[in-house]
Length: 289
Image (cartoon, rainbow, N blue to C red; front, side, top):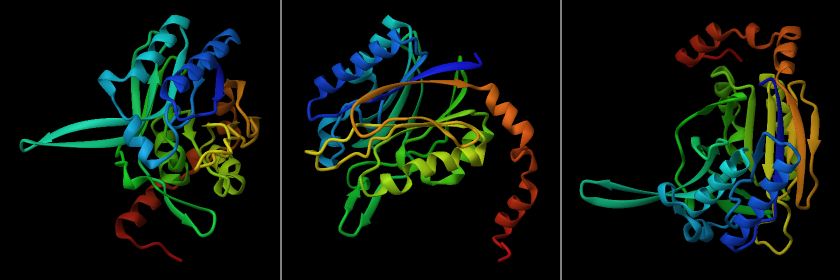
């Protein structure tokens, strides 16, 4: 399928899991009515973006009320859904000891309600911008270690989460694995959002000549962590072809994957890469300044 109609579900997240899921389902229903092939939810769409809430709202994948609900609507409406992310609880047994971990995990669900793949956020958001925002995901979350590219009827899609977009190597690896669309459910804040959100999505699109999509939760003033919103779709030329504002909003954008091939032919950045030199220099740890 060369053309894909995506629905950007910029929903307001509250401190009520059931209501958040109902909101997500309502937006997926609306996306389906508008003819979307793929609906995308925000990072932590079932849970307030707060460390203590990650623990309270966490669910084991195999018995997740959230995932079962989203899988059900995906199957009912025959629509693909990227379930932004949820706090995923993993119970591990090592040497007769039981340990619990929580990951920030995104799940790709197909139109039969089947989970095709998942991504655990690799780079944890630990920042302290003086006088503006301080947040440490590592207080409660564990980092994932896998680069995620999922085979879908729309081709290969790279999945990462929010802060992952700042690490250029990850986007390049997803691109080299064949992804023509990179999706980042996110929740930038009012300090980092206005400064970097749009610029990062445009940059990763230009760097890799792919479509980039960022789906955020809507801004909520009464929240302890205020999301920036401004969900975005950028084309391989780096143009923002769709963008929300602060409030709750559903945006439909059509992606033509032929644009990727066209731009790569006209401006063959990827084929001009001097990977032989890069790899040699990195191996020797000697980069000329």
